[in-house]
Image 1 (cartoon, one colour):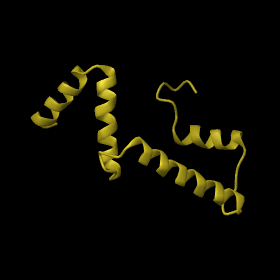
Image 2 (cartoon, rainbow, N blue to C red):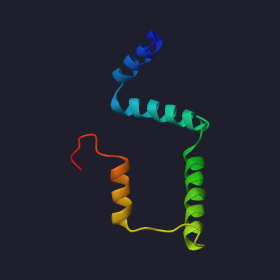
Image 3 (cartoon, rainbow, N blue to C red):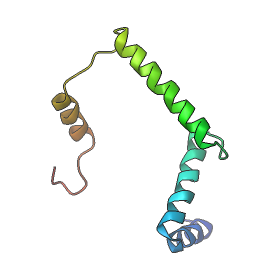
Length: 86
């Protein structure tokens, strides 16, 4: 870790939890290529478009739905609990 990165990490951890969350959120948005100034309305509209497209895929038979149990088992196999208790 470079000294600059370590300094940023120290500064981030010194922030209040709400401030840390806001900084991390903006950092994650930057990784997705989303504009940092995206308004909540723009974000909501993008999610509505995504959900509508997925719903259309289900209604038009382009995707096959599985049971909750099968989906959960696949999720747990792919993303095991870091504590190992699930």
